[in-house]
Length: 161
Image (cartoon, rainbow, N blue to C red):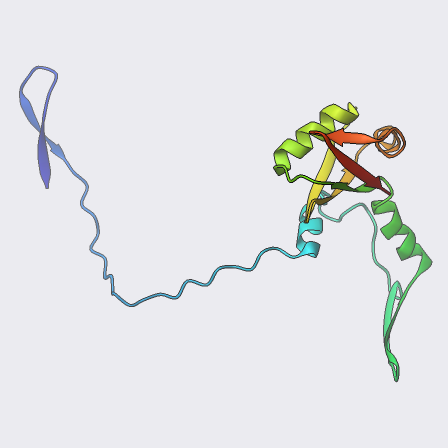
C-alpha cells in the first residue's frame, strides 16, 4: 500500500506506508477492577530508599519468635532486632498541619525553606494532615524538633518525635 505526497521539486512520489497487522478484537466486555490504594506499610517500605540488602542488617534465627498461647499470639523480638528498628526511626518526626490542607509538594517545599535544611528529608503522607518526616542529618532533625513553634501558611505545624 502506498500514498502520494508532494516532493520538494513539486512532483508527487509514491511513499510506502506500513500496514497494520490484522487484529482479532472481540467485543467481550472486560471488568476493570481498580487496584487498592497502597497500604501504610507499602508507603513506608517504598520510601526506604535503601540499596538491596537494606541497611546492612541481616535478620538471624531467633530475632522474631511467634508463639500461640491460650490468651492469643505472642511475638517476641530480640534486643538486637529492636535496636535496629529503633535506629531506622531515630531521625524521624511526625508532623501535623492544623486547620488547613495543602498539597504534598507544597508542604515539602515549605518545610525545606522553613527549616533551612542542610540535607534532604523523606516525607510520607499518612493522611488527615499527618506526615512522617525522616531527616538525613541529625542537626536538621534537632533544629525542627526544638526550634518551634512552626507556622505554615498561617497555621500551626505540630512536631512530635
